[in-house]
Amino acid sequence: MNFKQFGAAAFVLATLLFNPGWAQDAPEVDRTSTGGAQTLEDIMARQKKLDVDESFRSENLGDPDSAAAMSEQLGTQGGTSDSDKWRGIRYNESEITTQSRGPAADVLIQDGGMPWYELREGPVITYGGLALLGIIALLAVFYFVRGKIMIDGGPAGTRIERFKAIERFGHWLLAGSFIALALTGLLTLMGRSFLIPVIGHEAFSPLAIGSKWLHNNIAWAFMLGLVMTFVMWVAHNIPNKLDWQWLKAGGGIFTKSHPSSKKFNAGQKIIFWTVMILGFSVSLSGLSLLFPFQMPMFADTFGVINSILGTDFPTALAPHEEMQLSNIWHSIVAFLMMLAIIAHIYIGSVGMEGAFDAMGTGQVDLEWARQHHDLWVEEVQARQGKGESS
Amino acid sequence: MKVMLAGFVAALVIAALAPVVLDQFGWSSAEHWSSETSVRLD
Ligand code: HEM
Image (cartoon, rainbow over all chains, first blue to last red; front, side, top):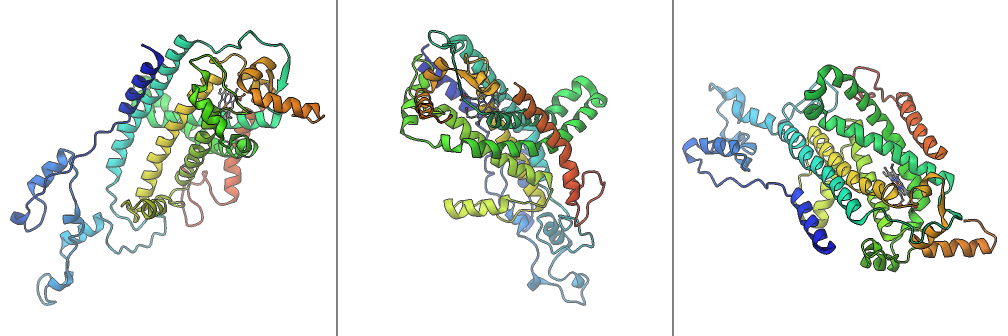
């Protein structure tokens, strides 16, 4: 099998990983026999996990015009029956007043909890976990097929400065905190399913408490690292024509050629923007989870998306619903980031001779630099010729 | 390599300081209750 076929097969397999079983719509139900109320078919459809249109219940909240006269038995109920009232509470349509001033105190029933829990314990763990194993397997295959990318003709022996100390500090602040966040996040998500059966509750408890502490608090280091690296490197990561040529040549990865590149090649720019955009999003949803109910963002975001794309996302969300969406979004974005970063760590360490030095000592071999970043070397040398530093 | 260690240590120092700083703004993870001005972080 040649590499193109292999790549295509891997791509198709990868898309299958993300292929959810779409919920089917339940067939139309005739509710005349129950006077518009729930029927056995509705209940059976829900048990079969079909998508039931709930509007026959959520909008059936009583009618003031049909109120019984005050002197009659149910007159004090106004236009609503007990069932209407409970439906109003369940679908968050009732005017609730309470003395409790805590956040979300006026939501009495929020039934999004179960679907959220099932999504988190089911597809998020399954597809997220499989995707991580998949990228590791793919990299292992790549390593055995292509091998370590070596410096053609061996190292030159002379060195050139690639990253200043402050740049490396920013990178390792970001990387150290990200790896801690990834491990503690996975532990929080998957520990219940995979660790408790093995090590038991007593051993898992301190691990979970410690994980939560580290995850909540080291997030600030991640955000600082993200801002630092963004400010220092964004100028070198603006896409240009050269990137297109680099991509068309596949980065020279399989042809063992070396397409021209400045300080960062197109592959690195992709990593940079993936880290920045997903990192920003994971930070925002993380803050929303860290300060419960204080930073709801999804209703507003959905509003913007609806106005641009003409979609119909809900813009009135219960406080708990905001938290559930933040949680699911936080994990999806985190998984995508982990996938990109695992590949990045591979190519920055075992995958390529001489790459780690850039972030290790800051000094790379001149021959490595010429092969991977020829135009950058020319720029640096031209500047040094004029007596300026890199 | 020294810079790499410095980055890791700095991340841990920031993590240790975060609860102390947040406390100053009323975001306490040590208190076991929530109120209008202070919401538990856990
Ligand atoms: C052990 C883990 C890691 C290693 C060995 C590593 C290695 C490297 C190296 C060698 C470079 C410089 C490449 C060059 O010379 O051009 C680099 C750049 C970079 N790293 Fe890492 N890194 C690691 C983890 C991370 C993590 C966790 C993140 C983000 C969350 C990250 C984000 C970046 C970014 C944005 C760049 C600049 C763009 C690029 O070169 O792709 N790194 N890394």
